[in-house]
Length: 101
Image (cartoon, rainbow, N blue to C red; front, side, top):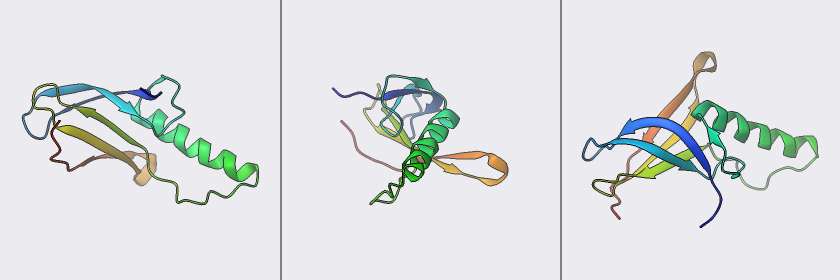
């Protein structure tokens, strides 16, 4: 088991409609923090900016923050990506996945 951050978000399973609320992410600082999607986005953006301040150019393209959970009823993996939108609003987009555990 590794470290992660807990994401405060509510959604429903795209396969069975079960309410979901226990989301995790490895996109942030991974210190078991409780974050909203907005805070996760800001932490990710801040970490990228710190690299540039110290003159370190990331060798890989910085990925958008992702958070995920598994449905307790059907086992489907539910994953969401956070993308910047207009007027500083964030878009939370479900990633289509049919993977069952």
